[in-house]
Image (cartoon, one colour):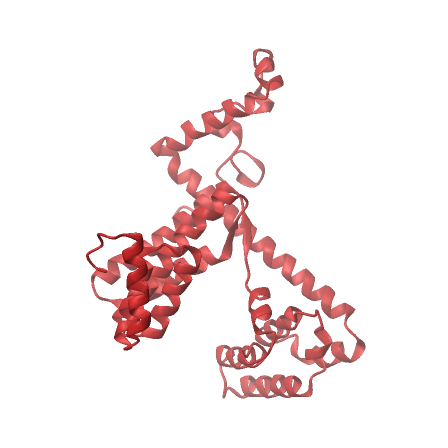
Length: 315
């Protein structure tokens, strides 16, 4: 089987070059191109050439492959950057904090948990690394994993639940700071959104077949992509948000079908937060409210739909 990640272009590390695209790059400019270069139009010629290249069916697979590669590369760089920040934070912590966490750093699960100490809103890593209760939990988790009485996933969930508990006054800041995101350029964005749309397409097919739990997994995969990326421009970010809204509403539909009404309301709310005029989100949330006998809230959403679309029959 052909290796899908093998370098394909003639550029550095197999990247696409202007020669691969058949379009004009500055390195290919001739004397006749000089006026266009000086007037700033040469880039427009290159852009037009690239568009023509991208529209040819035989080049679609090459472009998508390159975009996926660049997207994954951005993710790896972001993770390396986060790890470097973690190392720097640990090394700059006080001696007691370093000594306290040292026994746990070889365990990959506990190392990830300790990494969350960096997300303290006051940048107080030592507050957690010197906290007797936290250290006791780390010891207990380490022992339980070594004994086999607790899986790695269970240990991590228990620790993170304690550190990120909503009753702590900095919970919102902690949640924001622990949300991993990657800024991507337009070319990488296309690849990421293509991947997201493919996951949603699979989810839609499963949903139509009433295989709701399986559909949810596909939608959650799509969600993980659109929540990871951030656009470099306002236009790109609007495109990401549009796909986030669609994904949230897909998940809300599954939650409704599974009678998980609270989650359905939450995901409709996420969509409406991004677009408060989203009729589909308002209708879906109204249906969930009504199923929970919260009729006043259901009516409020329906009234807003009537304001937005007076002829809407569902309202």
